[in-house]
Length: 219
Ligand SMILES: [Mg+2]
Image (cartoon, rainbow, N blue to C red; front, side):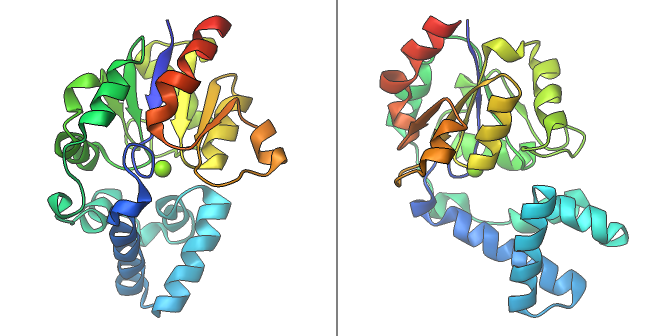
């Protein structure tokens, strides 16, 4: 049986909802306030940290450990009225219920926020559990330790694990770890990027048609 690990932001709901843009803006605001940066400098710092360390929080922890308070960071970034951006998604629920095997949420965010999003989308009960950034010892995808910890917590083997994620770096890392890696990407993908993952789908709703059979025939 496959064990499904589904990313949250940009995967279970689309960027077009506007939610991620608001959270992203609040992350920049947090850096501006904590570090005394201009909006432009905060944005630049963040881009550098995400490419160097995997996430903004990890960059903050590495370069300004005295400023890094993960719980405060998430509380600020996720202080957003979710109902303004998201609503129950019966199509998502039907999609997830068609995935055979256990389903885990696997996110670089914190579990309280993740559970709020799942409840708002109406899918909290279809997940066996949430592997959040605290559960991985603050190691984010695409760091190998995050994947190892997710397997340990779910008692799964890499050969049965499937990652579904909208970030290419995260999917490629899962592929290197021996997982079946599904990249959720609605634009044309460069061949080199395609080749580094196992499947590319335009939206999560395509999982039953485009991925389930392949996963089952591999396993
Ligand atoms: Mg994502």
